Length: 77
Image 1 (cartoon, rainbow, N blue to C red):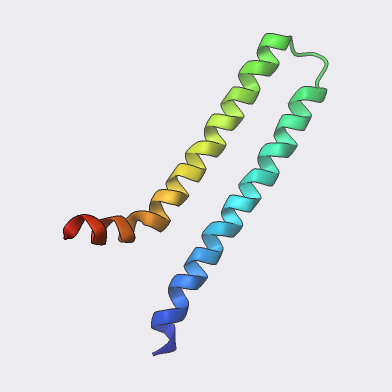
Image 2: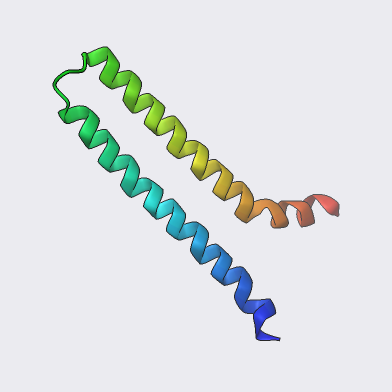
């Protein structure tokens, strides 16, 4: 009986941990890219754009995963 109410919160907590981990990884990768002296400024800018695109895609997937059931219920009425 408790599993029905606890499992969604555990699932949400796991998704939020993934989101926080992704942000920490994103910050670390950007710091490494900016400190690299062998890259041209345009390459640094492109690399940061790629890292941000990957991170925000992850954020979008997690937000849609969390809001999906609510949106389905909302649109079904």
